[in-house]
Length: 179
Picture 1: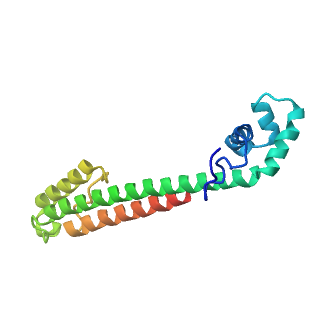
Picture 2: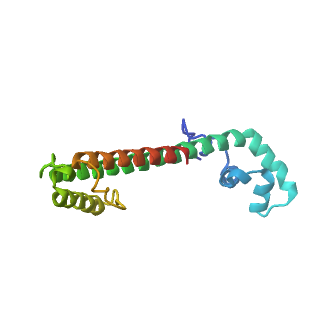
């Protein structure tokens, strides 16, 4: 027999026989379908054996111990989900940093030109370069370039993309927390 762990009450108790613990283990693994009758069925025992299970259940606090186990599993699953979300967020932030670094390099080419100044070709080249950067790192695929007849700077275009990425990131975070 094992000594009872301070925070793992579902482990075998010092005064619990191996057979009683084996039946408790069956009870424990039944999860939401947990009942003494379900243990009888799992162990292929007759209904007269139910009295023995009831004695063990009462003496060894099966309901309390199984509740402890359920709470442990839930906490473990939530911690695992948090770790996955943290890794995903770190990866996303890294991708965004990389995108912004590359976009800054594109902007440094000549970021004060406006379409109205007759710089349509340069602006289009910059916008295409921005799309290539975003597509390469898999963050955002721009479905269409802005209307070049509008008075827009490259900085304004990139700021718009960045704001879209932040909104997308924020909406994913809300969705993950709700899910």
